[in-house]
Length: 543
Ligand code: G6P
Ligand code: ZN
Image 1 (cartoon, protein in one colour):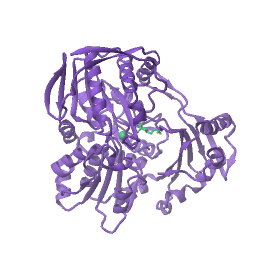
Image 2: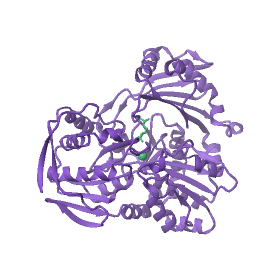
Image 3: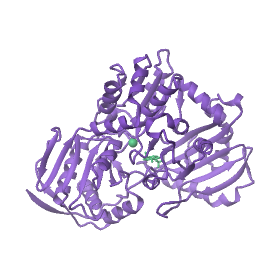
Image 4: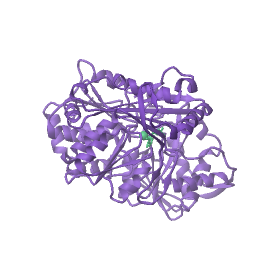
């Protein structure tokens, strides 16, 4: 087998975003595009020679072919070994687990997470470091630098490897081990949760419905929920991963998981509903007639954490991304533990988890996780909920009602304006940024601003500073509004407006969030002129 050196030139726009490099699938399929980026990863991590990597993806269109390219390029640049999920499939949390368990030097995850797949959809490549987590900004910056002056890449001239066969093979001097994607992940879950208790709950008639959204968690959920825990066949639906996710949008929220919502709010609703996203790291929790927001789910898990075996000794501390609601802070206060506030992006939790400073973390964007891996973990969250319900023997609705009575309710909603002209979105942010200092004391739609700033994060572990992480405004009446531009969109800009208000009056805990937040929504418009800047009358997506 020959190593070929292919001449290339830098391709613009290969800057990794919130979670790796995401582009249209067709862009990734353009000549040299994938190869350039992979070569830049090798350079950015100080070379791949002598290293062992994990490789897998969410099964979307181009996953299989991209995996073969990565293998040939790893072999050409001297990697010792690559551990690949069967058929190049690995959920993101399972990849994180493999990287850690097998003590590899890192891994490559092929995924654009919850973005639609297919030839006209999105594709993505992400590098995770040896701790199992997304590469920190220091590493992604080096990768980006390398994309800017590439003149060539190395690739092995070789046949495709048959990734459907478990076991070990080789390419040149590089070893390739094909592993079952589910086995090690399932084993890890069994060490964290009380499978016997959950099994007994289900055997006692508790019903559940898990929507894998034609994405990667299908095989995992089948094996764990139906196999190990005994849920009847059919409890897991849309369980076969498809290259285009069945033309769906594999993002578990009330908009895109509408079938699940209809079912959970219908006459024949099971006791518990859940969904996960394209690559298996996000989760959505629904009870009979109740959707649990990610921020509330995080707070409820923290408040009940000691009911699961792995967290029985309590939580060291908790962490949330800045735009995530402050429901978690109220729990932390009661537990007497710290609550860290980080920028959006799971990678910011990595240092806290590695340093043993936090146990549980989560984001409003449907990500929840703990120190068991270094990614958020969809099925883990589902099992955590099931473990808690099995212990407390109450419904999801009763658990949340109890929680709000005890801690107060942080009404919360996110309004997204998608594919907005980038210049207009920047203008909105810049206009607000320019007047932040003058806002305190002023009133907008009847609410007085108490504080306003642009969020910056000083990592307490490595001292690094991340600036420009969102504009936040707190108001009278326990309100907060955050404005941020998404770091994961692939078309124009996505403006995210995060709205929150805490309510402690026991008579006011059962409102529709949009109504409860009407005053905050009006203040956000008055503050930022969203309609004028975006040209939109209403958000595209409300979660
Ligand atoms: C990905 C990241 C998350 C992040 C989310 C939203 O899922 O892993 O950490 O919260 O994207 O990011 P965005 O920049 O689009 O708001
Ligand atoms: Zn994801």
